[in-house]
Image (tube, rainbow, N blue to C red; front, side, top):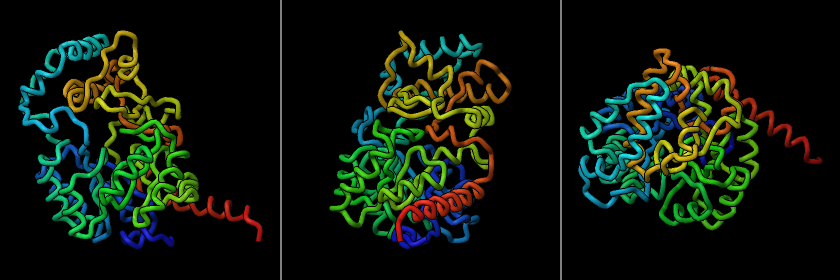
Length: 378
């Protein structure tokens, strides 16, 4: 494909795959796109293992790393201990989760026994993630992305010193301008259809709005994200001025994905209306698969979710237990089980390999471009 961004990164096709699964990263990169490993939950040691594996399986082809360092975070500028974080969680929220699980036949008496063993919130702080970033910089990555907010100065300076592009999630035109002024190279411009953290503006509106705003920043590339699961959607976004597509949800139902079978089966059966935008998991709005869990947090009398990272203190142990029991066949846990996914879930109806998804994108994209070209009079 003729693309300035492809030339900058050394890839064949501007399809970017965000995933927590190293197998998907390697498969997409080897098929001509670019895999991006979500590294927010990794320690320096575990990330080193993952990136070594990827290096061994991509034969020098380009890939990237994604972190989550929000600009707004409870305790962001304070040295809080695990006990400090714990003290900020109202009993009401723990009791609500405990009651919800018990109503679905799950023993919740031990949910938070180990919460104080680690200082939760470190994985969202730039100072705590410096070592993680340094591990990534020691590998031949071609892009580093911050998934929530303007990338910290350390990420920008160290990446640019190594000729690594820096990306940032963008949910509004004003975000795009802040990122561009900070020195970001690639805007992951994500509409509300997206899975995970997302804003309120649709992809169809947001892409041309950001592309127009970036006319004053010609060196900044705009990637379209949010609800994209086919090559024809990718072609439509590129017709609006995007330089490529950033995708996440579509890889969750691939054969290689880390998605637990219970949730994968739910996704394959879901329609585009079976997702909900909710603060119930992280404290910030995320789109996820609708389930008994999400219904409960939107019910009358439910407590207002806590700000990040406090909501995660409440929900992460619960979701881990739900997933484990769901895989053992526990019906209540299967009803509660959910995961981050976008409205494109309605287009994700067949489990297939990540490589075949890339090839389907390429073929569908080419067909869409031919169809569009046929509408132009010679």
